[in-house]
Length: 252
Length: 243
Image 1 (cartoon, chains in turn yellow, orange):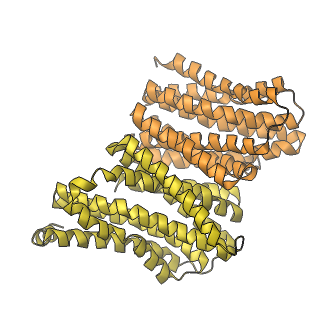
Image 2 (image 1 turned 30 degrees about the horizontal axis):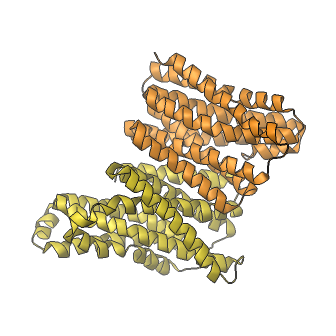
């Protein structure tokens, strides 16, 4: 770690910011790996995947809400409301293009689009966090980067949990997961350069991400889970993954 | 220990608010099913919010204990449901037959026992957190009481009886609130465990019972909105006022 920091100190800062952002984006792809071991996707398996995704996203949203309110309560609330609205509108808009509504593949496309849009929008705030953290020095930036990278893994897991039942290959799951995190390196650079301009936006974007994810879970993921598995199974999986995600966030 | 009378008083008040849930039925014979769905969704959101708040407080104290406690809480509710051969569908069971009324009520009582643990543990942390928890759970008891009265009404119970039953099933809340408060006062190491336990139990109850019931009764959209908003409300109020 120390050698890396010495090496890193000699790079132009902007390059370093970008590299850190790329690392966090790549980490998201790791979330697809568990699905290399899951062969068939029965309806029960699909429901379980959605339950896992729900627990992880709820856990992540709660953590985000806490972080956001630490930086500014009402900004986070406003952001969360915008996030909720955003999902509602996107949901309705995509429905118009959902020609084969009611058929599994039709609603699957909608769900895939939704989750990708949400996760990608979410990555904007993380990118801002990485870029802004450089203002606090290299070791802080390294720490924040590791935190976000590790936090990205369950997000990749959640995305893959939705994509895999649709028939995506593990490589496609990994690819889309990484794609959803691309805003991180892309936003990290301007955030670093204009840290004073971007910092006020942080709470709004955190709230946005949390609000959007929560609504997605209740609007889409959970009903899907309940339609494919019995209540206690869904209940236990969602609860345990939520606890795990929250536990995980204590150490990151 | 000085707050013991408060614990008793507040949890009793929270238990009693279930009777407010009976009010709509005094005014109208039939309540639209969707409203019951929204009532469940509101109750779910409030409960989920308070579960998270308590979980966070527990984790802030001792991560492994709180985490283990929450897993215990989940397991406790799951096992008690299994022992009664239920799948957390107490209200539906109650609709089905006379013998299942007592089962449904038993589950309701266990449900309120978990709430009691939440109140007791929260008050042990601070009076402010305790009051916050009581208010959230009291607010949650209203739609829950409404749901229960709706079921009992279909089973031809009179409104006064239904309201009394709604309150009675919440007695477990008072008992467990006092027990938890005293236990954590005597053995402080129990506090993160009980906070985690409450968080896990309430979380699981939302996921296995309140949410699926509300999805059944009202559309996904309205449920999603109501749950998200009420949950967000609790989490945000907590950060603004309690912390």
